Structure formats: C-alpha cells, structure tokens
Image (cartoon, rainbow, N blue to C red; front, top):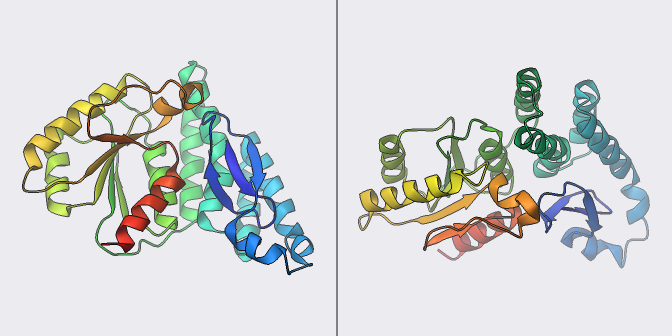
Amino acid sequence: MIVWCAYCQAFIREIPPYDDPSLSHGICASCVARVEHDDTLVEQTEGVRQLMHRLLAGASRRDRATCDALLTEARTLGLRADSLLVGLLQPALYQAGRDWQGGRMSVAAEHWLTSWCEDAFASVPTVNPGSSLDLIIFQTPGNSHSLGPRFAAKILTARGLSVEAFVPELPLGEMAALVIDLEPRAVGFSCSLPDSVPVACDIIAKLQARSEPAFRCRYIVSGHAFRMGGGHARPAVGAGIDVAMDVVALADELLAGKRTR
C-alpha cells in the first residue's frame, strides 16, 4: 500500500500489504511543519491534489495521452520526481505483475507497457548525484522483465543516491568485475518470482567468494517475489543477505549511512 501526503501529494513510503497498490493518505514532514501555522495550506495544495488524482486514474487505465499531458502540468507545479514515478508507473506495474503471474499478459501488452515506461522514464529526469556509487542493481538471471530494477534505480536516484541498474541479466564474471571495479556500498538483485530468489542468493555467495576479503559490501534482494501475498510469506534468503521491501526505507537507510561515513 502506498502512503501519500494528503496535502502536497508527495509519495511518503510503502507499508504492508505490499501487493496492494491502493493509497493510504498521511502527512509528510514538510506539511506537518506548515499545517499548524499556515491556514492556506489546504487551499494552496488543492490544485496538485486534483492533478494527482487524475494522473493516478489515467495510469490505472493505461491512458498514455492523458498521462503525458498531466506529466507536463505536474512538472510545472513542482511535483517531485519520485512522486511522479510512483503516481504514474506504480499502478501499471502492479497490474502488469499480476497479469504476468497469472499468464494474462500478451506479448502486445508487454510491448505497450515497456514502450510507455520508456517514455515515462525519459519524461521524468533524475540527476545522479555523481558521488561514489551507493548501489548496483542486477537483474537476476531467469527474470525476463527489466522494469522493476530500472524503476527502483530511478526512485533511489531521485531520493539522492548514486545508483546504477544493469539490465538485462549479466554473466557472473561480468557482475563480479563490476562489483570489484566500481566498489559500491551495496549490491542489489531484483527477483520477480520466488524461483529467482535462490538463484540470486547463489550468485551472491559466488560474488562474495570472488571479491572478499579484498572488498566487502552489503547484499540486498528485493522485488515482486517478496511482495506476493502482501509480503507476509517471504522467500527464505541466505545469511548475511538483506531483504528490502520498501524502496524509500532503503533510500533513507543508505543516505543515513552515507552521512555518517
């Protein structure tokens, strides 16, 4: 479930059940600071609330023309990149995951969604902070869809992290070379289905064997495999591997570690 600021329409975080794309409204830290002394807050944010409602409705219908027009309007109102990405793409990606899992997504529908997401990614630019690399995201071998890792990388970059997503899948040797050469603080694997989780864990063990003790980093697994069933029946992972359910919580955690280094 997506927690959304009822005032400024900023994306706040995700909470269980993770396979439910509906909205639960809260209030962000910025609006908390304003609400007690600014009587015009509700009036000032009415326009952006109405726009985001239309954007969410258009995304759920996969109405490309409407979303393109609303994106232009949203950028002029100063909506954050991560909020736009979640508002535009999250409903479509959730539904695509369900359709794919149930064998209901045709080749034509997959191509349409991929094309639409490509355009959306391009229309919501994010600036990589250019600092030392915080996170590499790999696509787990056997996962045919690359939207998940790219979507996560975009949101994490919008939150201020330096992130690189490598898709489609790479051979083990190339993954190991990238980890050793780029020395990221963390390495993540996107897992679409439960069967891909042990594959990711096996690759992580091999990467650790190749790179340690000369280089050590944190290893993370995430993706639709952990969101199925609301996130309550998560696949088992190996010792020393973290599971990231909420991309915003992961961003905040990595940013906090970055500031204390």
